[in-house]
Image (tube, rainbow, N blue to C red; front, side):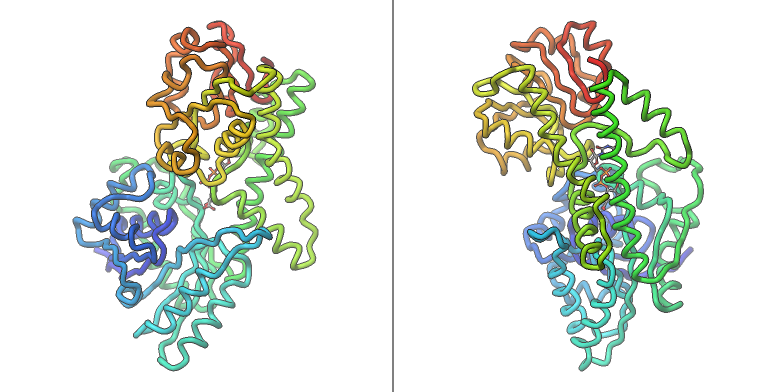
Length: 454
Ligand code: UGA
């Protein structure tokens, strides 16, 4: 039996919750805190403020086993752990630069309330050299207590919708450290993941035998850079696929065929080549901006990334243009929107292309009816003038056009013949290439997707 470690997690957003729940799930004793009291109250009542597959089961199991608790008392949380994971938000400022004020606040709090030495781990996505600032802040504000701190960077590579599985079966665990002791502590924390032997909520005891996770030890600066470099590369890949899709549309090729063949080259790989409405969410759009900003500050020309970002921003324009071409006038037209979350299996609508699209449709006085399996409540708080449907059928009823904006599996499984009959005009614009064009044509739809012949 391995020794369980005591771990504190500061910040109960998406990263903090998944990190806390998974660390408890692999056997450690974890205490999580957040400065949002209502969030802590929700968590203490046994509910989750976000939807993420398998997270509820994991939290429930660990709480019942006494390995996971939530507290509003930050000092209680900090003093409970030998390692503290900082998982607070680093949202973009107007300039695109990451706002690090929450990290700074947490550093000062740790320095002043910690009563024993701590390993302070940056989990939040931060620009290079944040670790150095963190170390300095801990030393300065903690100078009177005599408590010493080690700092490490441990970027997370979780994807929303598959975050629990990503944490428990990572392709790599990156730890940026300055001392061997910090490396040893982090290796110990991740030992159950590296060696297996935990109860996996995703695969129920039958985890697929994949390649083993790599434990990579780097400097703190490199670890911080790896995260931004990874997300920006993924963003570039998507924008590249979108350019190829545009070219396919103009010249009569099929982007599915092209990206499939291109992705079979192991130097390129098949992932993140799906064209459509582009990348949204709270990671890729903000990280590419922060990386561009960082490059500029360091005197490195990141025009390549700027271009990827520009291409992404144009995706909604191009989609709307297609809709206008088909419908001519949008005012007073009834438009059904299938999908609000920035990707399937999450209720997260931050920087979701569907949200920007709805904003523009409403500005043109279209009547919007929307449906999403998880994200309606969050969207209702943004748009009160949208009508929200109870399912994919209601959203299509009497619609002049139906837009597919998130590739939820349940949308693929809808009875599209039934939808065909219920629409005022059987026009479907598929912004995620979710459906088969031949089948849609056979049913009789006017169907347009991205980069594929209509
Ligand atoms: C992303 C990264 O994939 C994770 O590795 C990283 O840990 C995370 O950010 C983070 O920094 O926290 P996530 O934002 O959950 O994860 O979502 P992705 O799966 O990367 O998708 C981002 C967006 O790109 C979505 O809007 C998705 O629809 C879009 N996308 C993705 C495409 O348009 N095409 C693709 O081929 C893939």
